[in-house]
Length: 307
Image (tube, rainbow, N blue to C red; front, side):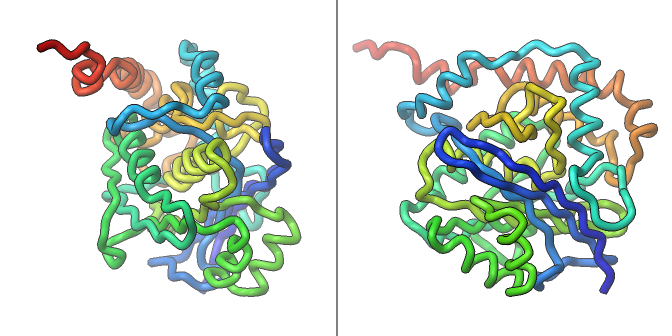
């Protein structure tokens, strides 16, 4: 079986610790099975809280401060520049370069495996709900049927991360990952010959702190949907070695909405996408603006109670 491996290797400094991360995409002619080198990874540090439509909770202070200072207005040129850098490139490439769109073209069904305490499955469900609400045309949901899943999230205790990597990917691959990156968390995609993502894996530590968990969860889940690159020249994106967000920021909502516009197909080149961008950006701007407005349920929740 022949694989193309694409990896982003980056060093990132979180507020809590120095962390390293990588994104690798692996592909074959058909379905990627869980063999030591059959699937890739992306590893990174993370953070966030206070999302979804669930009960109101106090947001992590680090996330709240980032949300309050978030830039939300961007030119078409700024959005276009970030999209081409994040969706097409890779910091570290093994094999022939493949600057093409990688995305799911089928419903994304996520199965969550909880192997650590605290049980973070409710938080993952809220994050998935938040992503679905903010990305048009993305059919993503949690499933209880592992056989029907094409995206696996494994939640582990921080001390069990290395063992989990070894069990999923084999000793040799795990040694290379640990030697190069000493990862805190990771994600990866498996694509077919048409650049359709057919499998994604995310491994997250549940006990490394609130900010780290949410920052990791958002970035790794979104990268596993096809936003595979990190680039320090884009200062507004979570896909930047020097930026930690902990929530789904507006700039990255633009990038994911462009990626999942039905007119942008897996395997498209930069030139092909560029020809579509004026119309796609117009649609994306309208969607992101509306997604930022308070939802009806949230407005009702904020109303004072009256007898």
